[in-house]
Image (cartoon, rainbow, N blue to C red; front, side):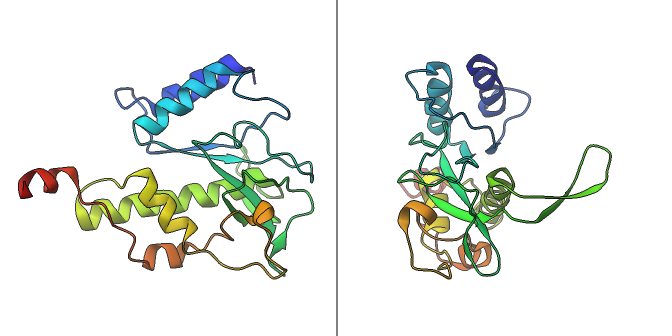
Length: 203
């Protein structure tokens, strides 16, 4: 995927006035060695997405080495590494680094291919959708209970402050805040920012 095509796809999803109007974007594309200076179009769209409260979740790459791929290394994405489930440890194929925000299960993940056949896959691209689903559930929870969408900082707080500990000694560059725990995030008292509509009425 070219930088321009990547930017167009992200912008189409993030545009609140467009036909998609996404609240969260699954970005499982990663480019080794690429940075915001080499791909300014994507950099601009990620800044825009953050400004309009769209969460972008990105995979860190599958080389098994210390190098978080672009755009997961961007400050306005949630960078996801991959863990195996038993024991709960970093996948040997997952990249890692200081930009990692959270880890999720990415080994032996079952899903449907375009023909409707169940396939088993491994990689950070299969860990990302789990975080995307968690974000979607948190958004739905606040919409149901509070009547508005959560801010990005609320979502990140719910996810990052309520993680599981890995089975091996914790390494922040491997796991970020820890391993995704959807139930703990949903059960936490994370709705700290009132709806803007409620703020106006109270004022």
